[in-house]
Length: 233
Image (cartoon, rainbow, N blue to C red; front, side, top):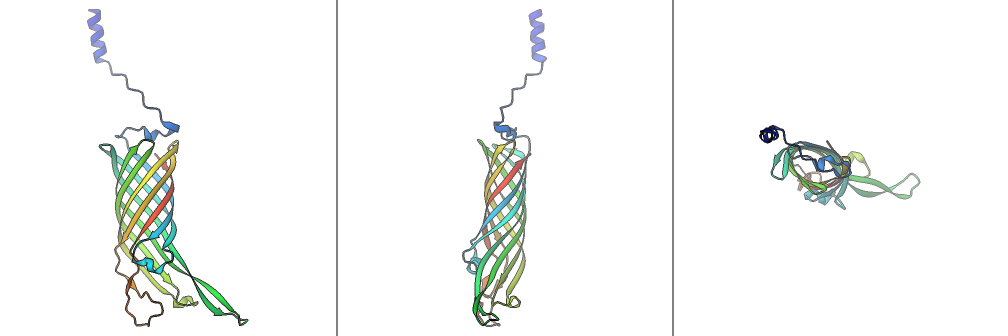
């Protein structure tokens, strides 16, 4: 009887939970159960590469910028979590141009002007997160709005600049690696591809007659290569 009673008690008792894996350097998100959500917040610096038709205005077609990245992954799907991501940022592409002018003393000097192509983006869409050892692989796609601005100097006089502004829908695809370093804080390395759906055109040749027809797309597509500080919650 005592043995039978002990067997009944052991059968009804709650099982002892298995100890959690130790979190390396306090990065508990790496050992968190897939059923528990993860929030990621990142502030990034960007290096832009214009890969569309607007690259003809730029030499070289390189730029810089910054961005904010918010991700919420909550739904486990196999070895991954599914969620949403929001990104906002600004990327600009400057190109130097010099004009020779005569100053007040009669000497020839160079007036420095800049061609500026700038994009401000806001996008929202689905995102996936997969833990791979000590890092997270994250990728997704998003839809949103891009506000674009192109200014090209024709002469030393800013009033003669070619200027165009656009408000356009856009799609974005991204992939990156989140690298927790200590206590759920670390870095994120990523690449974004932005496609802008705009039909706005400008005259490529700045020396063309005033009645020349626009012949070049002003806003097209570009890449952002980003390095971010990221925190996970």
